[in-house]
Length: 449
Ligand SMILES: Cc1cc2nc3c(=O)[nH]c(=O)nc-3n(C[C@H](O)[C@H](O)[C@H](O)COP(=O)(O)OP(=O)(O)OC[C@H]3O[C@@H](n4cnc5c(N)ncnc54)[C@H](O)[C@@H]3O)c2cc1C
Image 1 (cartoon, rainbow, N blue to C red):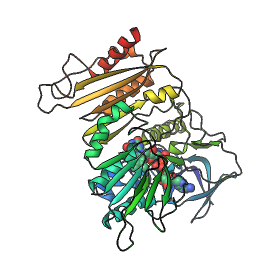
Image 2 (image 1 turned 60 degrees about the horizontal axis):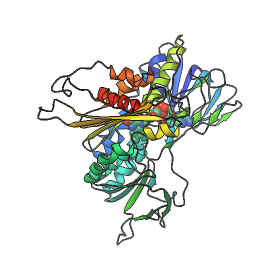
Image 3 (image 1 turned 90 degrees about the vertical axis):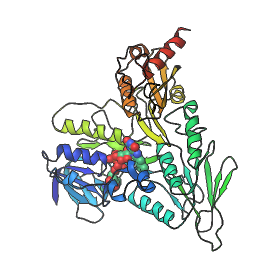
Image 4 (image 1 turned 180 degrees about the vertical axis):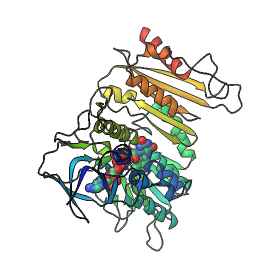
């Protein structure tokens, strides 16, 4: 039986990161079943036709150039005697095991969910399935879940000419990223782009004989796909309502797992010696309040893998938690959020004060300036920054990262009012004001009242 010092189960961003870091030092293998490791974030843009499907495939050389054996197979059992059973190949043994098996889209087990025309959105197969439906002139789509993935997919489908309904239980889009008042113009923009947002609605049943024909919501509303004369399918429904962790079958050892994933400590160690877990298959904790936080992102999977990688190279690093910095694009708007929204902060027990600001992306006298606005969420008692949201006509990731860093470093709103910033006609508002400082000053004013 072939033995490895380290085996990683899973070839997503977490598995690739570990290969690059550890391949030269350890006798190591990565096991993954699919033909390609994919850039999932880019899938909506492949549907839109902005990039070819092949551009979403990562090269295997990312793993193999590091001297790591890439085994294209599926682990069917992790056994207590430190061996792995594989679907196709011979069993292998390991000294250290890293579980990086990610998640799969969650499709709620409602009546009709087994009908043809129902899908999640993550794999190459999902991508090809949607593209095939578009090519067969299926013109109607319901996307469930108005988070970043649901929004990006809806826009791509509408761009390809489909009639798209985007359904969510929440009363506004991007409910885990931004609060309702920040989302209003985005909803207007989506409807301009051909996406009909259906708020306050939970999908409870799908009806049809062979394929889905009607989508029933708890509000009583029903979306009916048009009847075709020859009885052919006319619509699809894609769920983007969240994910569930993939936990391989484990026999002969008791690895602790909860609803949101495998339990690890700050060094990515499970409760079983020499068995680690990283990435989306792990239950995340917020770096702000230490409590469980859902919402899985590659920008969290990679730092987790890095912490483990550095520790296996002899360092002593600790993972401090997930801060949820994220971004998306809604029509002409760039949108980002970090930390807790006002709604989430209140749900998690904080008393909050929020500040707002609005400036232009360039000096207002410049011809191509656009608007940008921000909301800042601050803990009323400690004045600690808890979260921020930005909607802008220009990219927001740099600003979101700055604000995430301020949350990571436990900055107070007073700290943010002292931010030293840059200004230039093409790149910012006048030196007289800065988006972050203005929002912080707004919070301070309200705190003093
Ligand atoms: C459409 C879409 C858009 C996204 N956009 C963004 C974005 O813009 N920004 C961002 O930060 N994140 C984004 N994400 C999330 C991001 O892709 C995930 O957080 C990231 O892929 C998680 O990495 P991972 O390595 O933990 O798991 P995954 O990427 O899920 O990889 C898991 C791997 O494990 C393998 N595996 C599972 N079970 C077994 C088994 N039994 N045996 C062997 N192998 C197994 C899988 O086949 C896969 O190779 C997006 C996701 C989707 C679906």
